[in-house]
Amino acid sequence: MPVRGQSEERRVHLVGVAPWQQAVDFYYNPDDDLDLDDLGFTFPARWAAGDLFVIVTTDSPASAVVVVEETHHDSTGPDSYDQYLGPFDGLSVRAVERRLGTPLPSAPATLDTASSERLIAAISAEEKSPTPWRELDERGCVAHSEPVEPYSRCACCGKWADEEPVLVHHLLVDIQELEFFGYGPIVVCLTCHDLLHRPLAPSSDDLMFGFRPLCPRCSAIRTCQVDRGFPAGPPGPGTLLAGCVISDPVTFEYRCDSCEYEWTDDDDGYQPLPAEFDDDVVVRARIAPIPEGVYRPYSRTGEPGRVVIGRYARRGPGPHAAAWGDAIHHELVGQDGRIYLVDPPTVRSAEPHTWETQQPSDDR
Image 1: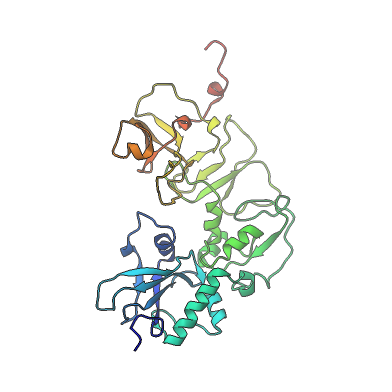
Image 2: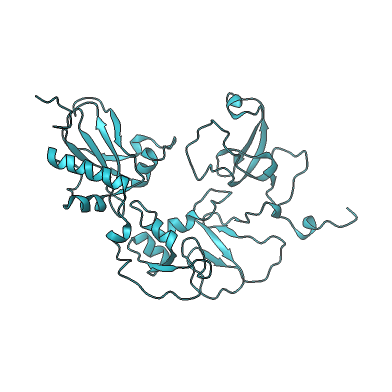
């Protein structure tokens, strides 16, 4: 008799999970701030020790496999799992079904032994050699082909037609995308088009804002690009026109859609600070690099090199001083309420240069 949990009798259960963004952060890109209770799972009624859970997103535009886990106990025991395959940042369910030649049931569902083995084999094959999205063409972008206007630019990364050899149309189907862009299709470069067709792809507007820095003051994601002059075509959503009259020596490139803060990424556009200054002075600085050997989950908010604004303070030795290799902690209490470790040479005044500070008079 085979032992329960061996491959001869192991069954596979489809388990739904939402929200999909948090699921990817939890499994694929571990996030210390994310708790398992933030996720909603739909489990089958019963399972046995050694069975496999195929965790499938239920709220993403296209369903995707995030991870395959092996259970340690049956449905009456405590929750305990090991990762069996993955985790993935999204493995297309449509591509897996194409390999199977049949659609999968909606989660939660339990497959028989034969179907379970075929599904695991299909997931393994798709992991090793993902199906090109153009073969699936779930949005119909391949079938929809129209000439692109010569003054067009990629709606996501902002490259113009003369910078990118090929621009194509991307069809919008998501309500959020349609509400933001107000029309469709949009023009994108081939690189962004491939990103938009990943199994768990960002929306077109999220991808566009992903190319832009977070707001230094409030850490909002949606920051508008400020263009000056008179472009050949109309500005797209997320782009503001500021005309061509420049009255200050510093030209701001971005404006936050949430707090309306304006800034430039150029450090030289901001006034230097004296050697000694009060702790209550608002400064601008860049987040320090992560020392070798120190693990920190990836986060756009805490990404090294990002510009932040707040109150700077040098701290003495702390409990983690040895790990960070410096007896002094260069902390910045951000105006977004977070505490950052910053790179001291990048600390400058939060005030941009004026004509007087940029070109001091001779009698000073």
